[in-house]
Image (cartoon, rainbow, N blue to C red; front, side, top):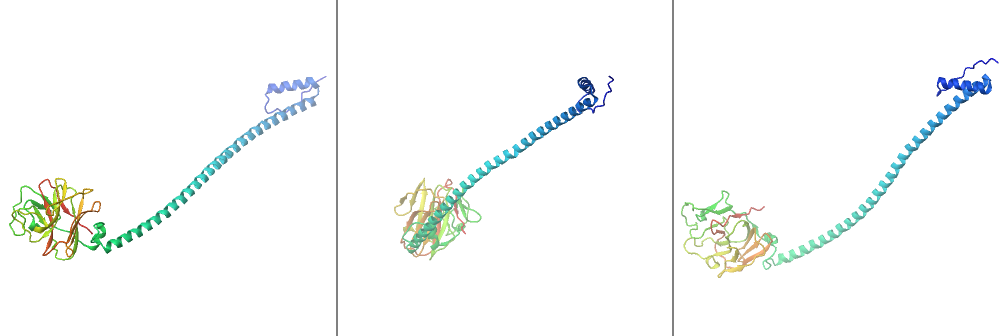
Length: 317
């Protein structure tokens, strides 16, 4: 029997040698060229299907992996959303608590304001008898921005150009002699002349180690031995060697809770009162009360030595 080889379509994934073996096998098995053709065709189709299945399997796996990522993102988003929700609820609670605290503080402030107004009304009705609250007391006085009178300054005292600061200077200056100038006491007077009314001024003493502050009659003795006391026309307090004194006769020892940086002086001419306050802690220092003033009174400043430091009048609005 003469065998005629039948052309078989070359499978996509087979080599020439593989195709030859397949052809020979088909001849041997069937001896029918038609069978040989059908077998090659089926092998080609099976290989293509297998390839397609593998591709589909890979694509399916990729799709599954691609679907896993959005799922994870969604789970993370859910967790984040729950966390934000919890934080928002906590914030809401804290905000409500804060709101209640603000309302409580507002009520307390209103009550405190009413209490202050009540005390202030009481103070204003009897402020002369109550030696407290210098800030309220100032409302009853005329505030003065003092300058110093160079014509009254002792030769050892040096005044700044603006006339607000006095320091000790050595050697003493050569100044023209005049009746107004202090010769024995190292003092200087303020420019203010008072014969009526109520006046208030402040003096900075923070860096001053020994000083006298107060008021005196305009005609006090400037020369010779002079004792500073009300009998001689001086109403003042003193810091000397770390101790505070009211210059009464005899002198009165004073106890201060806190060292003053500024001293406030209140002069009420008609009432005959001179009061001194520590403006640092707003405490009362000393008062000369019910004095018999006559003539002109003037602010008084004294330094004791070159170690005393400066006295500075405070400029107030």
